[in-house]
Image 1 (cartoon, one colour):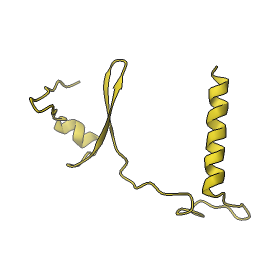
Image 2 (cartoon, rainbow, N blue to C red; image 1 turned 120 degrees about the vertical axis):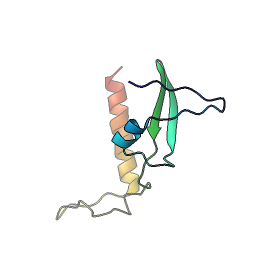
Image 3 (cartoon, rainbow, N blue to C red; image 1 turned 90 degrees about the vertical axis):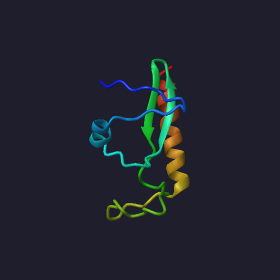
Length: 88
């Protein structure tokens, strides 16, 4: 564990060994979130968002129909609702 200081400009420096271990190049953008115990820094994705249509067929199996974006979103929504209902 390392200790860092907040500068007068509200900046912190991520120690070099941590940057190297996590492969964080200069210019990496982060999402910062407040948690119950403090702050969490999460690097934003290195890969651009794509739609199912753009990667259609990438992992396709013969004879299997590839769902479209609407079907995928509906499936995700149904699974999240089922998980939410199960946790109540």
